[in-house]
Image 1 (cartoon, helix red, strand yellow):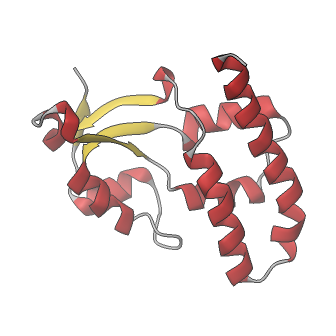
Image 2 (cartoon, helix red, strand yellow):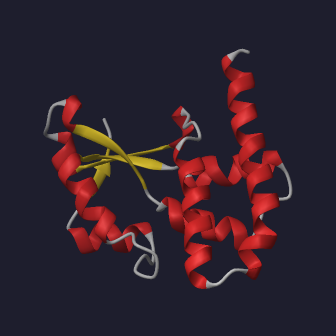
Image 3 (cartoon, rainbow, N blue to C red):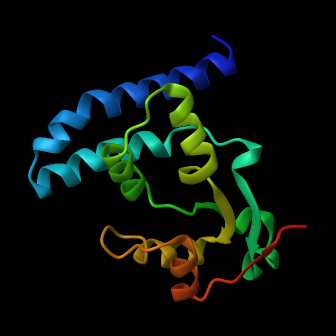
Length: 145
C-alpha cells in the first residue's frame, strides 16, 4: 500500500468512526460523550497533516529557538474538533478531508513551553477560538520566513 492509499484509508476509517459512533454519542450522557470524543480525538491526532495545513505562522519565541525546540501546535483542540464532527458530521470522506485540512488540522510552530500553556486554554468548555487561546497565553504569532 502506497502513501496516498494509507492516507485515504485513515480518512475512510475516521469517517466511518464518526458515522458509526454518532448515534451512540447522541444518546449518551455527558460523561460518555466526553469519552467518545476522546476516542475520535485520538483518531484526529493520527490523521496526516500536509504542507497546506501549515498556517504559515510561527510564534515569536519559536522563531528565536533551534528548530528542534519547536512543535506543531494544532489551532483547534482535538476534543473540540471531535465534538464538532459529531454535531455536524461530514457527508463524505472528501468533506472530512476538506474540514480537516482547512480547519481542524491547521497548525502553527510554537515552543514546547507555549504548547503546554496553550493546552490549558484549549480544554472543553474553555476554548472559544484559536486567536483567544493564543492571546490568553501571550503567544504572538508572526509570519514564518
